[in-house]
Image (cartoon, rainbow, N blue to C red; front, side):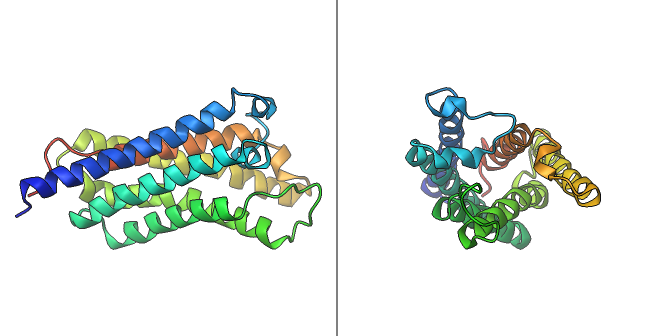
Length: 216
């Protein structure tokens, strides 16, 4: 049986994790409205462009907060045995992917080769993270929210919507491969990526938010 202090500790950690997610998201939104990053196109430029600006420190902080918040929330679910093993692995891939994105910033592709190691690692980590998280939410939803059908349904719908955003990117890649064009010019990449990121963070928040009553 889980003691009352333990339940309160888990509740506090989960709440802190969700707060870190919200703060990280808010900082990214802030970057879009303060100079000079307000000049970065939200429809055409990816979120990682903020890491090339003079506000790189703020961008890195935002991503680290999301990573730490995610790790805290998943850790609580794991301690309560409400996190399937597959979801735990996928959640770890999401968290590590975010940290790799910070450690290996997006390079200025106009000045470096497309085979640049750091840039390639950044791209791989981004894809792995954005795909791993919605899959983790889908797998964990039932076990994490057994007594909250509405929240479980919302988390699953948002996770599927996140994969839908990613499917738009994959579709552009396929079309470009056939036509020989540049896939990132076929869609409003910045808008799609921001939509995917926001949908995923909301899905994660729904999954990790502490329940009113914790499992005994």
